[in-house]
Image (cartoon, rainbow, N blue to C red; front, side, top):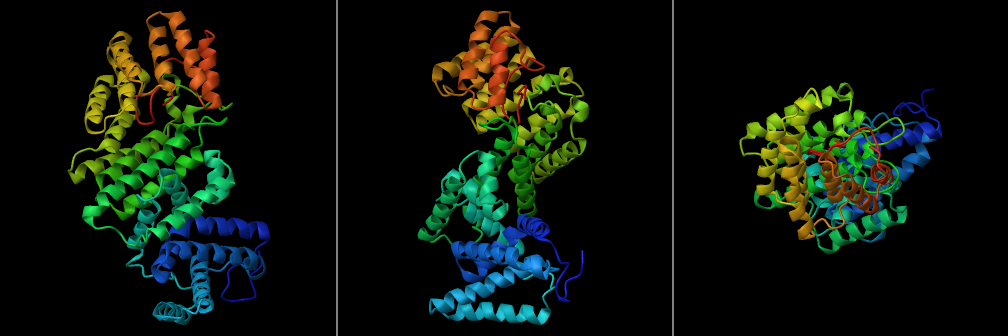
Length: 449
């Protein structure tokens, strides 16, 4: 590509190349840019709006002038100038505006290709503060997810809507309401102190876990998996671990994600249908991801606070990763880990996965009473994996008619098209995909792995 006439500019670009460049810069640098602006202007809502305006300017100007050599600095500087203009129009030219003007003057003296428009000694705290805002407890979980993916992950409203199969307008409304809620609650831009950080961290981890899980096994729609969503969750988890390297559960969640994502290449056929764990080609598993996951789990253990829920799930995933074949899986150990998980983070889904592990370790007859108790409780009344797991166990002990009925019940509850087809095939008397086994969650003993 030809060089731009402006010596302070990078290469000139056609519109399509510019759009790709802007998207790449935004995906990588959006958290830093919005965090820096929030610190400058004192308002998360205004900062995000200013950043979006700067992004629009980039799309309009860069095709003619070329992509700057430091596009993140360009976007931040333009957004700060817009902040000054905003306050001038509002007749609020106060000390804050003067401070921003001082920053702009300093950056101009440094030159437009200065490495960063922020203080590198403070950026980690700023990004962490932004994550804490996006996952603030005053927001609903749906709003936390949308805001995290938008301002921390750099995804567009269109991308978020496609990932969760909701209208773009729904995503946009969630983001607008979230920003207004944060403004109304006067949420400060800061990293909470140690006494307040633990519950906030739990919320952040929960959001990333939810995003990853939706990519791992899509809740609805035609695709069994949405791996791009899981990859985004892993990227954000790595960012978080870099910010809070002494938080064992952040490392535990990263380990869980890496070890689970390692199985992605073997989880679906070329046609997009599920491949169950006992029939997966383990040669396709990503050994680098397994190594990264085991290293993250070991780092979590070295901190010495004991394993939390995410680290325990990672330990289960590590058991699968360590087994050369399905038959080599240490199911007794997995049962023990599920028992520990059930004590510190009890839930019906954990109990369902424990039943699946018991079936593999001790036989289906030992696991059926666990399923009976779960069914009697009504806690998983609308959860398709409860009848699906029962059906698998019934089939293994030869109660074929009951198994088909349970498969049909599971198919009626399944919202994902690929999974529904698999269950309907089994209800009709086939194996559906390549294999049997029991169903379970992302870190557990599930046959869909």
